[in-house]
Length: 267
Image 1 (cartoon, helix red, strand yellow):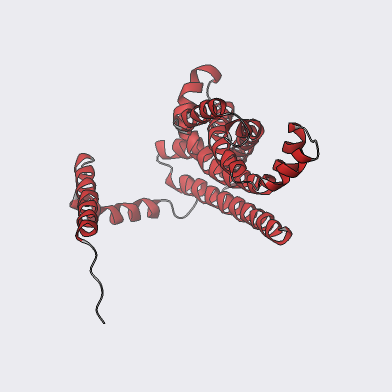
Image 2 (cartoon, helix red, strand yellow):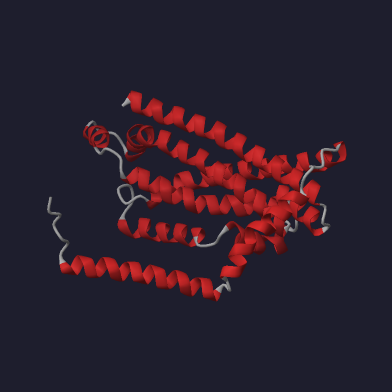
C-alpha cells in the first residue's frame, strides 16, 4: 500500500515547527539552569523529603492548627467564586457581541482580558498593603481573577446561543429584557453554572497556594512548618490539603455532570 507523501511545503512547515519547539525547550532549560545532573538527582531528593514527612504528625495539637486552616482555604475559594459569579454574570452580557453593540463589548472584553492577565498571586501582592495579611486578601485576589475568567467564558456561551427564541420573543412584541430573561438566560444558565463549579475547583487550589504569601489558607501553615523544618507536620498539612481538594473536586464534578446530563436530556 502506497502512502501518499505530504506536499513539500507542509513537510517544511512541520519540520520547522518541530525544530523551533525543540530549540526553544533547550534554550529555556539552559536559561533556567536545568542540567542533566539536577534532573537525575531530583528523584532521590524528592524521596528524601517525602521520607522525612513520615510518620505523619497525627497529634491533636497538629489537627487543631491544621483543620481550621484547611477550612479557611475552602471558605476563601467559595467566597471568591461567589464574588466572581455575581459580578461576571451581568458583565458577560455586556461582553457578548450578539447582545451589545461592538464598541461596548470590545471594551468590556479588553477589561476582562486585563483582569485575567494578573494571576492570583500578583493580585494578592497588590492587596496586601491595603487589606493586610489574612484571608480577606486571598478572597479578593481569587474573586477578582474569577471575574475575568468567568466573564470571558460566560460571554462566549452567550454568543453561541440559538437566536430562534429571541426572534420569536421579538416578533411577539417582547422587550429587550424579555429577550434576555426568557430567551438567553434559560439557554446559558446550565453551562454557566457548570463553569462556576469548575472555577470553584480551580480557586480551591489557588487558595492553598496564596497562603504562602500570607493571604490566608492552608498554604500559610505549610510554609510555617517547612520553615521550622517540622516535616512530619508539613506532611500532615499536605495530606489534609489533598483530601480537601479531592473531595471538593469529586462533589463538584458530580454536580457538573448532573447539570450537563440534565441539559442534554432536556434538549
